Length: 57
Image (cartoon, rainbow, N blue to C red; front, side, top):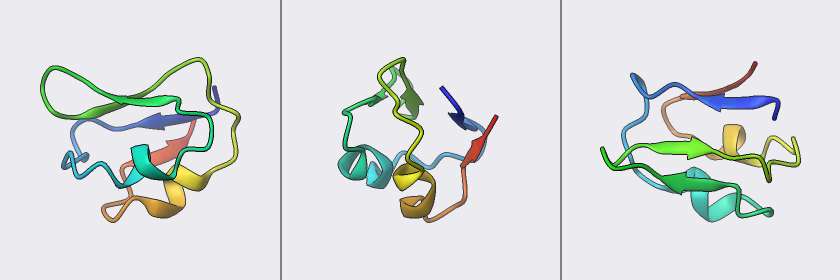
């Protein structure tokens, strides 16, 4: 997993989840998002994030 979502920056919009081709992104209990092990490191989520909350680790 080469990408991570900064929960301090994430606004919970879901743009990343809808663009993930591997369905690796899911909502957490606090209405933020997290990237799971199914991530294929494509970067689509980072490009879709309107607040730049996703970056490579």
